[in-house]
Every structure is written in structure tokens, then in C-alpha cells.
Image (cartoon, rainbow, N blue to C red):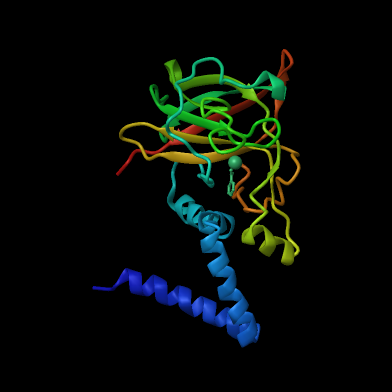
Length: 249
Ligand code: BEZ
Ligand code: FE
């Protein structure tokens, strides 16, 4: 029997060795490299570093076999302990923000509606923060879970999120800067759809023409499926998305 762990780890090590050879990396640079890794561990930024460089690759592998909608990064800001919402997600009047209606349907891979699916929704405040993580914004704001109803339909109102910079005041941000890269993500809405008997679908949607959509520091957008042309109805922006979820094996 092949040892999968040995196969994967050996390939990773060989890939790193080849990169060192390709660039004639010196002992001094190698020392700087592991000092960087120690700084990342000390700053507890390993999850951020993995999200930045590797999470999308795992999503890409997952999407190769998916029959449902494409997945995208979960990122570090998912919370499951959120209120059930019906028509509106709580937002803070002092932040202002443009109303955004998130609506559409949940279907299965045969096109049949899926009722009673839980749809977790989370997005940034109008100033680029995440509730439950930043500035003591309570977790029941700017996020919630809703249920798909008759015909698999869902609809809830929040506010339009904005592009934001991932944490950039530690070693990960310093690395990006030294590499001449930026730390911006485009404005996006996160979704996680859960229903017994189906695989979880974790994905994100972006705004067509939005800043950084084609230049996300996390290289989050793998397909254009959820780059949404916003429409405006009665002064409210609308993001209309049908999600296809796949039966669990
Ligand atoms: C996010 O989408 O919220 C995110 C993803 C990766 C790193 C940091 C933030
Ligand atoms: Fe995000």
C-alpha cells in the first residue's frame, strides 16, 4: 500500500528544494527564511499565510470534481454562532452603507429546488471590518444564517461590502510588501450552504467591475461564475445568485 502522507510530504520537500536550486538561494537567505517562519508562528499568522498562498489551491482541486457550484476560500472570518435572519441582517446605522439584497435559489445538481438549506452569509462592514473579530462589532451584525424556502428561494438584506486589506501589520504583510505585492481583497460576500445529505458549499461572490476583482492578494476568484453584475431596484443593490449543491456520497 502506498503511503499517501509520505508521497505528499516528499513532493512538497522536493518542490521547495527545486525552488532553492533554481534561485541559487544562499545560506544567509535560508536563515532569513526560517527566521520569517518563526516570526509567523510567534505572531500566530500561520492561518493567514496559508489562506494567502495555499487555500485557493485546495479549493481548485476540490472544484475539479465538483458537480455543484464552484467553491471559494472560506477565509478566517466564518462564525457558525450567528442568529437566524429572515428579511434583514443587522447593520449599524452609524456606518451607513448602501443596502444590498442577497437573493436567489438553492438547487440540487438535477435542477430541483432545495428547501430548508441553511445559508450562512457574512461580509465586511462598510468600512472593511468583520463582526465578531474587529472593533468589538457584535457577531450578530453583518452576518447571519437564513433558510431557503419554497422553490429553494432565499432573500435577505444587508449592506454593500467594500474591498479591504488583509492583516498587514505583521510578518505576512511585511513579506507581501517586500515582494512588491499588495494586501487588498476585492469587495465580496461569503456564503456557506449546508443541508443534511449534501456537501457543504463554501463560496464567495464578487461585484463585476469591482476594484481588485482581477488582482486579489489571495487569488480567491477561480472562476467568473460568481462575479455578479449588480442591479439596482428601488435604490437597493441586488446580488442574485442561484447555488447548486451536490449530494454527499
Ligand atoms: C477573507 O475573505 O475574509 C479573507 C481571506 C483570506 C485571508 C484574509 C481574509
Ligand atoms: Fe472576506
